[in-house]
Length: 453
Image (cartoon, rainbow, N blue to C red):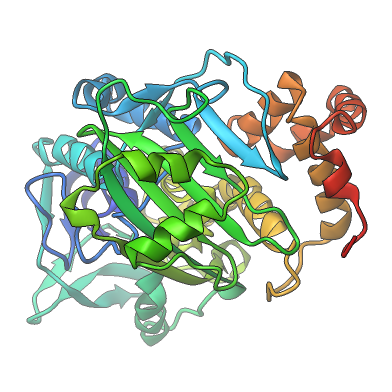
């Protein structure tokens, strides 16, 4: 054991996974969550993105299985839909579907509420973990360069050797608390994207598949003028989850008729066909979610860090949700925290510094992927990644090549699932295949036509 007591602020995926790694390193772990945590797999107000399509990336599923042995098997037995991302996922990008092939990799499709409920049940079963919901944190306590605990609504104090901030995008409150203790706030970068999307649930007949034999569908926009995105996932409970939206206020309406028109106007018939034949759940009630800007906080650049405190998940980096990276990256960060605690213990700021450096490494690839994609639109505001224009031109070629080349498709799939670094797309063999295959894409002519032609 590296300490007696750890407190986790926030009981969503990042906080619960952090509690799991802390439980084997501290005598006691307390998770404090201001929301009411449901006893069943239900959406809750404190996670407004919960009712919408979520992607548990393959690398995230693998890491969760390491932390919670048998979790994938449990989720599938409870209704999560297993799929091969190479052939069961219809991926429409740059005007055409990626070519399909059996990758041999296992993905699972499920709702955020179901996944979070299953993981939280595992953590709650640990004998040294207490989950306190309907409890708010109102401040931090500190002494001589370290955080020593949290102050609860009502004035009680929970003293701790380590406080993990998993409060998500609301972590700006923590910055004020840290400043009160004499610690500087990290530099923050925002990338304004004005993303919004609307989701409806449909009944799914067991065994039913999408047009062209798909279990899932993803549509990425066709830049620079088309900003729409779409997803349809087969999930637990014999349901289809259909999410429509896009960048820069290209948001799908909540009204069912206009929602279906949005689907009909997409450059493929799959979602329109599904909506025309599948019965809606709950009278077709739609839920909308908006997300103005991605945000990254650079703790690793601070000269002074408090001992006894680390941030995790969206409290460090909040990604564009259309890329489905958040839950997986939070899990990676929790595993980085485990390694740093094992190496440095919890008593000094060295552990926090090592953790933030490791977390920055885990964030680097998905942040580069997401913001690089966001900047294909002139309306995107924020610091543009170095060399972004050149990189995006090559990535467009790789997207076109994925329409006909299983090899290029697999490289891109592995990058998206955080199984390999983004540099994999620049390997000489992949570059050669990309440049040769791109011209054979059925979308080549339209994708390379001059603007306005």
